[in-house]
Length: 179
Image 1 (cartoon, rainbow, N blue to C red):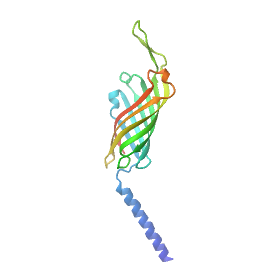
Image 2 (tube, rainbow, N blue to C red):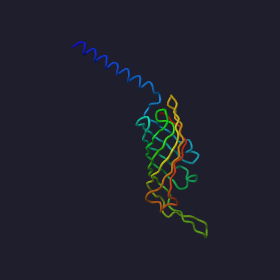
Image 3 (cartoon, helix red, strand yellow):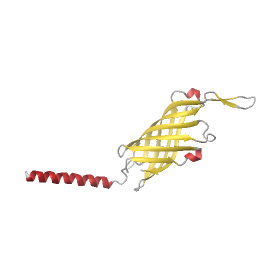
Image 4 (cartoon, rainbow, N blue to C red):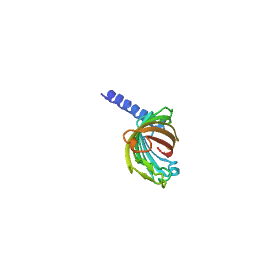
């Protein structure tokens, strides 16, 4: 009985040490990440992103984009965009990635121009639509958890494209954050 108990304790100790070593081997393995798009203020907007890593090769995230200066971005008001990413780098959830996204977006309606006084009016003031698309990008992560990311995405409006001046959406970002 004492030998069996001793063998079980040694085995449990071995598993505990192995689990601690695996956790300490990868300093990049942190599952939550928050980022801000540094290009946002140049476009008259603000974009924040939360990403949750499922494993070393995939993650889920959500991004919120809000336009506070419509002179730079005349059509888009705001968007909420959940996404799934697949990473191809050697580090934990870093390197080159592909993403699929959906986007709930608020867009200004179709503008109609009058030729007499060159004025404009909006036929549908605010159009809410759903878009879907794909993107790609690259992410660098430091051992301390600092994150730099560049991404580009392209998608199509699904339901109300005829009520706006366009039928495409895009995602452009250079983000900095912390994991």
